Amino acid sequence: MDLLSALHSFVRVAATGSFSAVSRETGVSQPTISRHIALLESHYGTTLFARTTRSLTMTEDGRSLLPHAYEVLEILETAETVLGRRRASVSGLVRLGVTTAFGLCLSRRLGELLDRHPDLSVEIVMRDAFGDLVEEGLDLAVRVGEIAVGSLIARKLGMVRKCLVASPGCIARYHMPEHPRELTNYPGVVYNYGSSWLDWNFERDGEESVIAPSAVFRANTSEAVLYAVEAGLGIGLLPHFQVRDALKEGRLVRLFPDWNIPSLPFYAVHTGPRTLPLRTRTVLDFLIDVSADVLRDEPSGASPTVTA
Image (cartoon, rainbow, N blue to C red):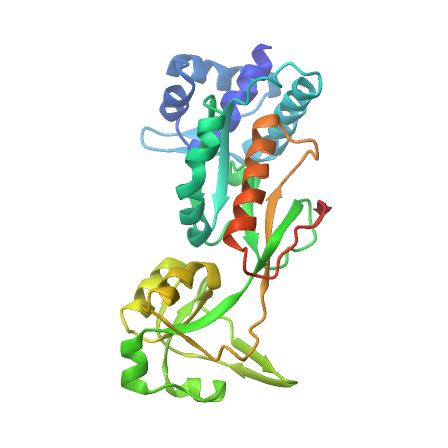
C-alpha cells in the first residue's frame, strides 16, 4: 500500500508541479509527499523530478512512468467500484479540461452535480487547445472537431453548429453583405489556435463559398472573439450556443442564415480504462446531460462510446 500511496502522490505532483500544492489538496504533510517520491525513486532506481529551489520539473523517466501510474490507480479504483465498495458515495477529485465557451456554460450548472454528491469535487481547466491528457493530469476533457486515431476513448456528445455574426453597429457601418464572397472586404474577428486560422466555409443549394477572412483581430479563445464582435470590431464565426442569448437580445445580428456552415462534432474523451472510476463516470454522465441542453437546438444525437 505504501507504493500505491506513493504513486498517488506522484501523479498529483506531476499534475500540480508542486509538493506543497499536493499537501494542501490531500491533507498529507509535505515531508510525507517528499518521502513518497523518494520511495518511488528508490524503488525504480531513477530520478523522477529535477528539483531546484525555484522549480520542479519531471524527468524523462518520470514522464515514462506517469501513464503507467495512472493506469495502476485507475484499475484499482475500477475494481473497488465493480466490487461495490464505493457505490453509496461518489467521492474524490475529477480534473476536467473544457473549452472556454462550454466551460462557462458548465460552471453555471455544476452546483446541480455537487449538491447531489457532496463528497465529489471538480477542477475545471479552461482553455481552447489541449495537449496530452496524461501530461495535463486530466481525467476527462472535451474536444471539438474530429479526433485523430490514437489511444483516446471518445463519447460523442453532439454537434456544434456555428453562426456568422456581427454587431448592429458593425452592420450599420459596413452594410449587410449579400453574399459570402463579399466578406473579404469586411473586417474579420478570427478565432484561431496559433499563427494560422481556418477558412470560413459556406454552402447553399450546391453552391460552395470558401472565404479567407481579412482578420483585424485574432484570438485563441472564443470568448475574446465574442467580446470583440459585440464591441463592433468586425464579423466573427462562433458556436451558436455561445451567441444564442446575444442574438435573442439584439446585441448581435446573424449573417447568411440561409447558408449552411459545417458543424463540428463535440466529444468527451479520456485515456481509459473503459470502465471508469465512479467519480469520473458520474462527471461524464453530467457532461452528457449538460451537452444535450446546451446543444438542444443543434444537430445532435450522442453515439455509443468508440475508440478514437
